Image 1: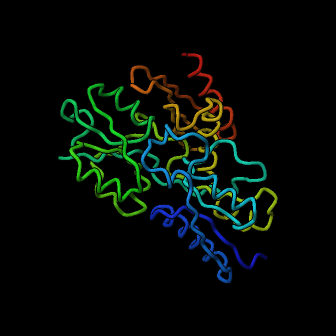
Image 2: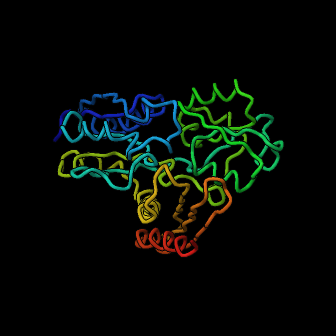
Image 3: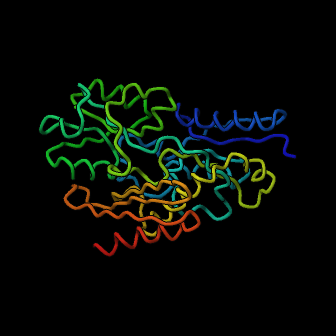
Length: 297
């Protein structure tokens, strides 16, 4: 039995909240387990003056943490799953995916206006090409401005700006008990979130059987199935931060329903696909979604 583990994480309040959630769950399961947390700064944390889509390289929020895993400085890493590339470094594995929080995006707007109600030419803050593409498809008149930083910093910047709105992930706001700032939850079947949004991933070394066994009770099978379809879609599309795309898969009574899109950055063209299949065919559902969109190009 493992006696001590070290968990690697980013240092934002949300990343620490997520890591402490995992720590709490592990302590409940293994009261005698000694748990340490190591904060690791990633490239995405260091470069705050550029949009994510303009920063070269993959794993902007994971690489430095994964390096620590590979050299055995830490035993596991907690990530927001939407930040994880579909291809992991050799020797690493996703060993648990926790029960998903609300996957939807959220609109913060002055006077609690919905997207359709915003004044013409309104400025909306987001650094996500996926969000930008969908916003401009709905409202080509909107002006989209980049914003970076942790959730609290972005809310502060938004309140001090002349922007009429900002888009954030509902999950992060809920976890930090900031969901009172949400004006409108954007239905994920219609305004499609990032693949894996709302779910946490615990990454380990591939052959570390004791650690993997330790984490097995934390894995949520329903979330894992949905995420498999979403990440299969993303991998098949060759996607990352540089291309507007997203997918959302929901599980109901052992049936899967996927909603996926890919679009132009200016919102002038959005290609959608929806499909369903059985839970054991999550991989095939994700693959079919990518093929359905690629056929439209």
